[in-house]
Length: 500
Ligand code: NAD
Image (cartoon, rainbow, N blue to C red):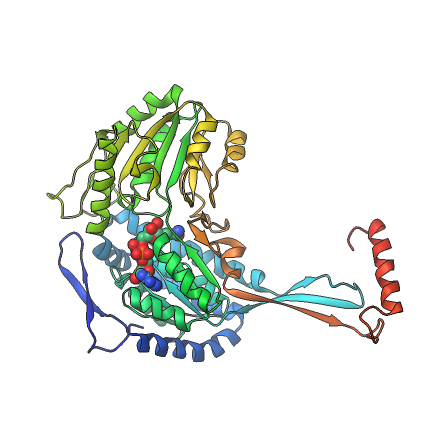
């Protein structure tokens, strides 16, 4: 629910393509945030006490409503981001997959599990997964629906309530999704939206029981420091500089289209965008020619339909960084073989899909997160050089390897210091909900999205051991003679009974 105080200074949200104001949302104060968290605490009692199956039922209904209303939701996403239809659909589809996966698997993942206590037979143990309470979610603008709600799904199913602070640049997608949640029967205080800027996000950290942050590494560091004061659990999903490696035996057409689709989705404003490509020398020329050919076929613009391959960028800040990275690279010897210019004829924030060659690691475009539509391609002379360069970064989010030798590709993937790698695809792990993913090094901390880990990060595990009282009674010391005898017997038995 949007904060209802109308008297405070609001935040004007603009359509990046037309520059027109879409609306004004409240810039929620510390008091607003505190009140929202208090309401969420109260609501958590009933929500957390409901069965997991009951929570799955309403979340599924929410998913169905989102799916039925996808055109309306996609319009809202596109209005505030400037992305194309395909990009907006990716958000709806991604969220729908999350809902389907967790609504199916949450009961089993969260079920208390039997564990072996020190004295089998006379004792038994179980691990419980308890909700943390109120989870604060702070999200960025590049996938305003998916990244506000994807983490909310497992958090809610685990029995938490959530207070979400979407990016001040794109708050309406989250507000629309929350409205549908209420229509689906999720109580208003179980999922709340507090709109606002960074100060609202900071305040949220002061009141919730866990913070789940997605955004830049610089802000993530501030969030971690603030959360450390409260010794609270955190999950940080941060920036990236993903590499793609194309080995000499790769299918050139497939690798080139992988680079194009993987770099220009959402005009490159994706944490797991392919931001640099290393190609082995024998196929370098063919790969570069194919990428150039594909880029020449791309349609960019503000229109509807899947035949618009790239939309607008969302902020002037990112567009300026794109220009800065291109300028820096060209000054250091890079060559632009496609794109390189703004397209004011299409809208104020359109930028052409751009390809750079003759790049090296002295250039910003190979080391710093660009977050824009650039493919810098570098020739390498062997696979060791490719791996070394791919790992030459502070980031460790995702990446891709293209090769016909699948076993080698999988083996090489494990040499890259990233949370996930796809072989012969790009960004394929992020959409495979059963596979957990999350950044290494400065790309993430404290949790992963997807799979079992993606829901357990929103729980506190508690182990409960029950002694049946049929064994020895506690004596005056921890190790009395009977206990000692049992321990020795167990030790001996372990040699012959491996299940012990
Ligand atoms: P950002 O860090 O500027 O902002 C993210 C969110 O944090 C916004 O809601 C913002 O209002 C809030 N915020 C700002 N200052 C804060 C503070 N001091 N305390 C608490 N909250 C604060 O990031 P952005 O520009 O919105 O998003 C782009 C960045 O996000 C890129 O670096 C991208 O790689 C990263 N990202 C990462 C993932 C991932 O899953 N790893 C996904 C998408 C985007």
